Image (cartoon, rainbow, N blue to C red; front, side, top):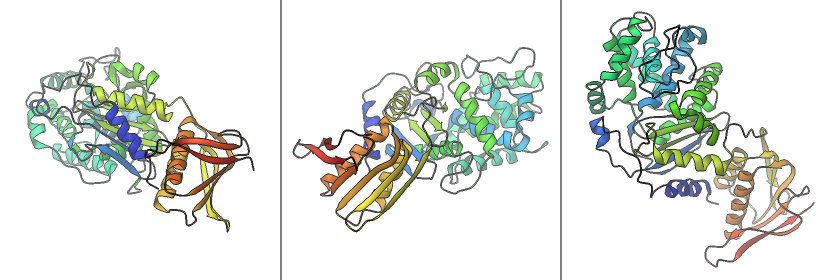
Length: 421
């Protein structure tokens, strides 16, 4: 059976394709010249399965999406208390490039605005580290989050660093408060260089999934950062990651997130998935217009809002009972649980033509789990399989035949038998 998940993700991308609102980041000449109508979406589970649709091979620069990951490196190297002495964790309510510091302390309000990101960049490495070595450490860390060796786009770097006047002003302001030491111009060069690292949506989805997985990279299995650091980063992303739109984002979408002016957005849903989108037209907050719409649809359809807390996903048992191939689901069936069921069927097709899906040990089926289960059953039936569902608690419906969709070739309803056994 072919998994329906890529089809759904493609539907999400296509549902936003006609939106031509927003504008390119025209203050960076190479970004002003990109194709404005591209769009892509990638989703990575915490066990390393990546689904990607749209222009998923497109490379673009990471920009401000680098901020939470470099913040994580500083936290891992120096500890939360030391970093908090230099950078706060309060939402600014201001644009990302605002020239402002916390009243009374002189700290940047949080590490997601440029003032905080410049400070955390300089905290990477031991005292006295050279500019080149610090830049190498930052690039190596971003590569470990992505699970592959990343590179800097030198053209973008040169274009950005030559016009980084506002960041230079912020850096000199930070130097005057001794939040950074040494040459402010070197700090700006390093920060702009971390923003110019090239990635794809698949890279970003895996980086986001590393945070969602408590700091363990899903594909390589490497613990990139401690669990406590991942929790701290996700907390700050939740309240500060979307700048002066953070409250609206949290209330409507509810996924810890970070955006960048090249059009990328990442979201990390703890314990579940990492998500990334790209589309270069930006709104007034500097965030991708289509990306916001894609995340909103995902959150609504998939029940991914952070405050909609699912019960822990549990195991699934499979086996041959002599008459049919049986899938015994257990616990709460949400997106993550059904994704594993679908992937198992897709990668290891049942040996019998007759299939029994047993819900006896399931105590809850969430909306997204029900939709995914119906679609999986529909596709199995269209393959010619005989499917029966055992649902003693009536989680799907009362006993008897139920419709799980439509046969696209005949437009006839697809039905399966549900028993109360």
